[in-house]
Image (cartoon, rainbow, N blue to C red; front, side):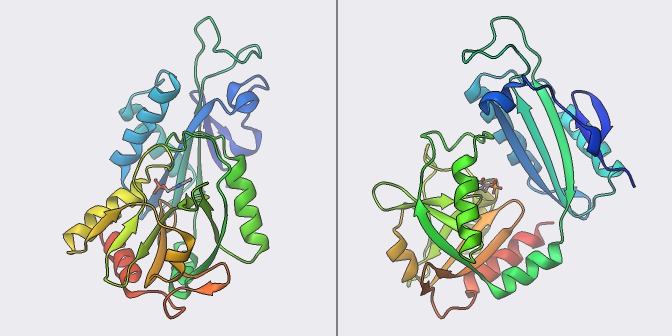
Length: 282
Ligand code: PLP
């Protein structure tokens, strides 16, 4: 079966899909992206991801080349062509193709739009959540606008690789003040001894996770108290529970941080309940 990608208005065989070498996404990481999880053929938290897409474009002063309805049409067609019912949709928009020069191109440039889909094994992700995962802590080496979902991901890539080489699923990134910002591709949470959920406040230091926002709503509806504040690795290691959230991993319990087990070293009841509550939404 041929897998298709969408590039600037055309559906192309994935293996042949290309952008120009002077695309500013390739040259400067002058591009933003968005990822939707797909379950049973439906986009999860679609509105939140569309809203963040618009915000990322606005922050980089890239004019939005499509309407939301236009994106939705392409997404539906790509999912249909690629027969994806469980997986993800990836969208990247760069400022476009222009002669290489750091400043924005002087003339009008058409943004580059690329969309791909991927099948995901949600059953394998569930097994990972049932077992719980380990994370390691590393210095946060990213730029100062982590709230914009840009493709400028090299520090995240290096941190994730270091985590994998250490046998961990994720790296928790730590700022200069010793506080955890977030994971390389997930938001970070702990549950205190009193059962309070803690996750870092949404400022410029972290990506404003759509799953994070949804879990906050669900947790509040279930009666949990939530504190939006930073926490240290030491506080997380001695917390009752820790977990991480993202569009593709939903809620995943963390059972080890560096060399210390969290709680009793097994997935916690709060994280497990929130994962179930999130999946019930679909
Ligand atoms: N933080 C970072 C750095 C990410 O890259 C991601 C997702 O890719 C998240 C958090 C989670 O965000 P969301 O729940 O919107 O997927």
